[in-house]
Amino acid sequence: MDKLTRYRQLVQEILYAHSEQKPAYGNIEVETIFDTEHDHYQIVHVGWEGQNWVHSCIIHIDIKNGKIWLQWNAIEDDIAANLVAAGVPKEDIVLGFQSPFMRQFTDYAVS
Image (cartoon, rainbow, N blue to C red; front, side, top):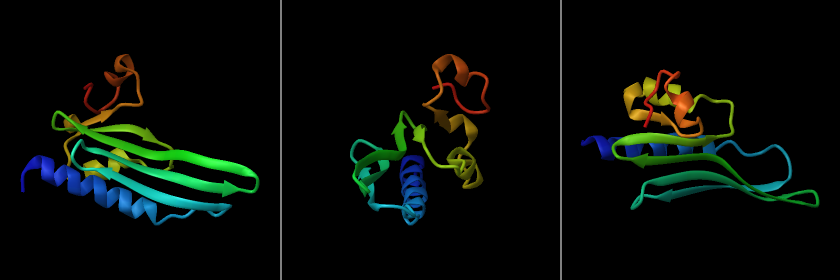
């Protein structure tokens, strides 16, 4: 299996696992959004909590130039560490939610 196919599969497996965790409050649906043509992957919460509309991206991951970009992670689980545990080298993981300047101080790729 080539690297891109493997990364797509890993990202989808991780997001599917997290999509099973339903919010304990409100009438909220958990949606997985996979754009496999452009390599954009998300988990979104959509619904109502009382009188308040909820529409929130929980996790956003892209694959760009052979690297996995963690664009947003609003859960406690360390997705980057999960990817490393699954065999993804740290130099293939970018913490996109960190500023380009700050990325140099992480154990992961700068871009």
